[in-house]
Amino acid sequence: MKYVVKFLLLLLLPSAVFAASEPVSAPLPAAALTATKSFNAHAEYLKYFEEVYAQMDSHYYTDVKRSDYDRFIKAFDEKIYPSLLLEGKSNDYVRWRSAAYLVDFLKQPDDIFSRFLPPKPAEKFAQEVYGQKIDLGIEGHKEAAGFVVDFIEPRSDAYDKGLREADLIVRLDADDVTVLDESRIKEKLVPLAGAEVLIDYIDSLERKPHAIKVISREYFKQTVFLKSTGVKDIYCVDIQKFNQSTHEDFGRFIAMLEAKSPKGLVLDLRGNPGGPPLAALAISAFFLPNGETFAYFEGKNKPRSSLAIPTLPPQFHVDWPIVILVNNMTGSASELFSGIMQDRKRALVFGTSRTAGQVLLKSIFDMSDKSTIALMVARGHFPDGRPFSLDGVAPNELMPLEKNDEMVTLAAKYLFVKPQEKP
Image (spheres, rainbow, N blue to C red):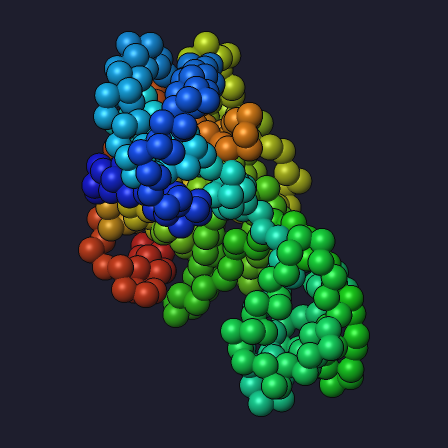
């Protein structure tokens, strides 16, 4: 499956990114084409490609061959550049799209992460990779009386100032929300960074009116949620992505569950694309012996980077039997966590397929024109030196079901009937 995904990315990523994000010039007449060449745009492109190559040569996790770069330049001169000129593309378009082709040309065939992004997509991509968001952190739906808050990000400014789930928003700035359609309300809840919005609302507990001024700011999204298993004393925690604050949310739920004396825990990592390895490392401290080596990463011309399991107070350590759910979209930090937990025999892994096979350290490098190159910079290894397979983590039990929460229920029933030995 991952090879199909890679092939689709190679075909679609450059055109999708550029078609959606960069203006396309009208076709240029022959005289304009001559003028375009006259100010030596070609030399500027080559200089930019050298910058791209230098970034990959310095930071990519394995060797980048100069001979491959030279072959790309030949293809650019003979095919890519003439074709884009005839299409009348802007200079920015030619530079950025060709740079995207260059990164695809130089990276490893099974690398589905590394890519080039122009300035606007680069900004959005960075927010997605790091799990950051810039908005008011409010989700909900419209009813006759106003806009009901269904969820509010716990690290948003609105949460800090008192807004909670089930509260009723009645005005946004000067607008009565009852006369706005739902799409317009949601637009107003996602203003530009730094914008201030006055919110009038009625709290759900005492039914009292409140007025707060909130700021659209950057925050780390909550990515940890409880799920019902339908099985007595077996609980499920759904981790949708890893970011720098995931361990805070996870710890809060673990403390809540500890009071219920669980007999087992299902960790749902299906569809979790990963995030910073340190986020997965922080979660491991709840389950694995503190202070031991969790894993290490090693890249070209870079010293080995070992990850030691953090130290937590004993009361935060849990010994519940665990099943981890995965699929082919479980990647990066989420499969690093799954693979280590499985290898240490601390959890069983159930899934519909192997994981994505992307246990690699990733980083983002800025170009001179605010574009970005996202690169894999090191490969992950088990503590004993074995590299993580690029084919992904193989489940202990393959499960063909993927409907809603059927896998959650089956995993919970397994833990109820046949609990694992405690560590």
